[in-house]
Image (cartoon, rainbow, N blue to C red; front, side):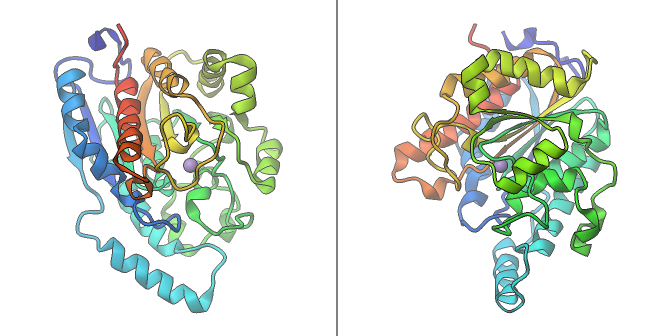
Length: 330
Ligand SMILES: [Mn+2]
């Protein structure tokens, strides 16, 4: 049934290609293990599922291959013990994202699907900047418990996985560390993003959302209107009246309720999306035919209490991918 979905922006015949970008990066937050998310999803058979069930060709891209991430993170932490900068491991996060950006920009063509497997959510700076190099008008639907829009000035934790949207929207750019100079200017307009699933938003972020009039659907809105209405409004908002507007989903698995399926993630928040809501929104956005890219981030297998918890979270990550690439119930 998957072949029934007409992916308007993508090659739609037997040559259709999903480029899988591995982004096993954990420098945007304190926990180890989130770097294993991509590997676990691949070990779970994700590549075969995409090829055999959904009939896409795949090619794996590995922009951080050959980079000694563990050593560089340790070096950054050691150095920052003395300097205590407001934002943590900025140059390290920038270096990794620049590589992800260049791979997404240079090694993926228009007409190919961009699937990025994290890693923590800081990797969306690179993946989304790369996607926007091909589709400058793309709308971004950000699925998350958190808004990830702290600026270098508002962040309290200093963890850059809480800041990627502010970088993409060029907020407080004059105060950025120099290493982020590579991020293109005029990249993402704040009216081209919509959030779904928010329920843990810092006071500074609430002000940013309000001041910039950013479309944000919290769990209140999911409860109030239902997931179908919320997704429809999010699609309409980012598409700006263009029924062919390309759409990218940046999916943080912490949007999903821990009790439902996602225990293995770094910043769990109760009362999130249930499993059907979590997948329905992928199915519906896919059904528009406009989806061109997906990030799946913050799967952290090392935070599982047992094999069952790990398997549930990893399987949910894989389901998110399949539903976005055209898997349907009938
Ligand atoms: Mn996030």
